[in-house]
Length: 617
Image (tube, one colour):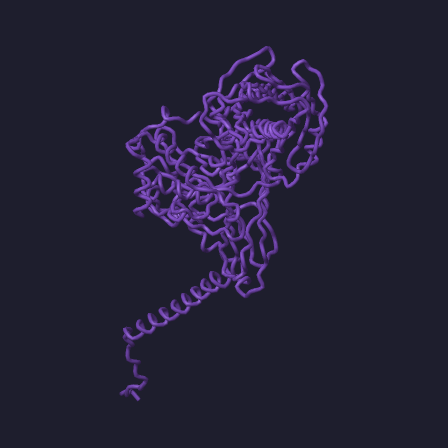
């Protein structure tokens, strides 16, 4: 009886552990006493509702051990939310959809317990599971977390399996068990062709109503599946920049300028920008040498005002980037890397040189870059090797985010420093430059489809200049999350600015003023929207034409910084003084000439008025 109770408890644990996806101790064995097959099918209907079906088959391969009737069997249905503190309400919704049957479709009784993270479902075996017999459970339920629609994009997720899930497990009783998985995704045919299906190791087939993807289990180990459907995405943005009034004496003389960086169009061609309104009108809108868009606004220093810019960003998927489309390192043409210059003196070698936080010349960086590169010559192969190195050797530190987030640079990151997106990017940029591949930092917003709403925040990634292609976005931070290989265009990033020389230049906002008021940073609001009517909106080229940056602006920028009073003081007064001086000089010169002329004039001697003697008198 004691052996029976012990065996019952042992086998209970045996059938629970695989479902919990825990890493278990392994032992080499030719054949396990019990083999549990878990066949998971994720089906998504045309409305985006996912139905999950788990067929669990328990096979007894042993004459020594068996599972007695009335033993308990447990199923765990976990929440997959990434940032939710509590999912109990959602899990209660899932619990109402649960169906548990045997292989013949007969309903089985069960009990449930629900907490913030999971549903625990307990049922009973209706018969002994002896050698040569199978016992089959069929669990079906709805899931409301693994499918989401953001704007025009559908994202479908498949939970991954932990390392060691296929190990043979040995228990104290001597019984051994093995768990085998199969994972299949069925998508309703009304969905468009996916942008990508991950993992790439899968087979594809079709039925009358479904597109069917069967995944390689080894590819799902420590990696979740991700299918994205959609060809473009719309983002709505609003920038608000406060303008403070100054009471300083200088405010009576000088104007104040604000240079605000606007969202730009990507060099890879996968992002377009449209403007709904800009208040007030800018003095001009121009691009710098790297294609960043800068709008200048002018105010008197006594104005209390604000700048608001509203518009839309449209992203799409461009052609696939792979080794066949990308050339070798010796094919890189740096003269194609920069946009037209705006008067700034730029050197193409800046794309390869060392800079703050990018310690290209440090021996540790050079050694790592050379080792990773090896004998590779194709730029895509090198980028992919660097990408994998960074994602495998850098760990994201959630504690580093926030006010204490100090940039540490590539070298400290290589040596194991705490890291967030900027460290991932800085290290990748530095390794690429050390290998002779131009790279620069990209700043904007990253949208995690799995995150809760209103959690998007500023993000940094990398742009790499690839021969035959041009600038290509690469995000090593997101690659480290197991989402996918982020090399090439996608729908989840909204680009704002890039920089190749100084991470702070161009700054999102720059103020030119003689007052000492503290500059308040702009606020950025950005969200995904379903649809945008683009007619009537200004695209970037139209905006630049309307507020064109001309040679006049270049010549008069310094003068224009003066307000009316300033121009009177610094321009009007000098002009009046010059005129007065000219009058004085003219008068002096005239008087001098007149004096000089009078000295050279010969006067005749006056005639005598003496009356001559008249002999006739």
